Length: 422
Ligand code: AMP
Ligand code: GLY
Image 1 (cartoon, rainbow, N blue to C red):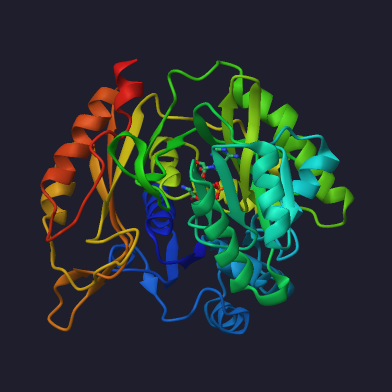
Image 2: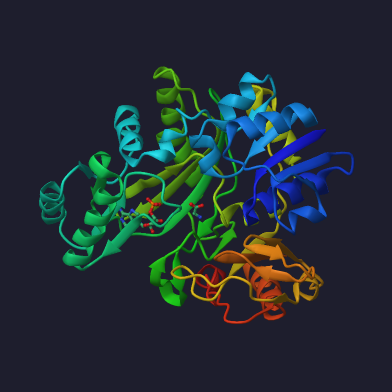
């Protein structure tokens, strides 16, 4: 199969790696890709979120399948453009991607579908924000309505900080600004990726992400500092409950609105003392959860993505999983998630990848003029360890991380620790 993958992060490296490992016969292309992806795919210097440029590339390459990694191309209508060009594409339409692109839209769909989620007020001015904050009380949850790369959310005990974030978010979009104020959800978070073709739904293995920058969930929110799968502590019927109460009703509601959702519905959940609640929907695979979920998937990924793209999920055989655990640790650049420093030398990637059970996925990496690998983004590498249980997978992942050398870099040392200890 000839496959074009759009995007340039560790999630896309994980997708490309899974496709490359399942068959030596695939011809894999990526745009724009990164230096790690370049070892497995032909790279094209095309902006993933430019529908015209992507369609031109698709017409030049003639792929059997286009796989869209990040949210920006989805919201920009790249899936629509590729579909119109007659090529199967994995990823929802721009309209359906509003499930991620607008938190207010997602809340509306959840209400229509009867999906359990946090109570919320959509506010368009600061007086409404103040009232909503006082109605829910602390801790305060303030969300920018639009796409913010996982950084638009502030959870704080400090009312002034909550108001300040709301003010900035409102101002950033002129008169169009909206913020969502939510009730605080306690309890552990789970990410469940549900693949849909617009009608049917196939869940992948559940994973957990670590959003805060530092150990013990301290520090600011990030795009995600690590992840693991499976979740030995989770209720046995969790996936079934999410399918019945969240994924299927949402996919049905989207079809009924005339905006069927085909692609991956990323269900971000909190398992609260009052039952499960949706924290967020995304219209794409999660990063870094994808790195651990795909490390465990035995079924060929191309078959799954193609079935979503061609409305044939009902015919797909039951998914097969490796009876192993996976842990990924993100190595972040100096300053992440605030002021990120670029251009630091990256050494030790091959040494890390030589640890048994370890592979290294690239995110914010680039080659300088001399061909040296250097940092070029906040989350630099995703080191993945696979082992017979979470303890073994952690040992592998952290042994890999220990071999990576990047001046000023940081990583969390407690990814999957509590789950491994049981
Ligand atoms: P979101 O972009 O909506 O996923 O929010 C990012 C992160 O903020 C989530 O993964 C949670 O850790 C936290 N968060 C979001 N909404 C809530 C909420 N209602 N209660 C508690 N924490 C939340
Ligand atoms: N890991 C969180 C996200 O992908 O949004």
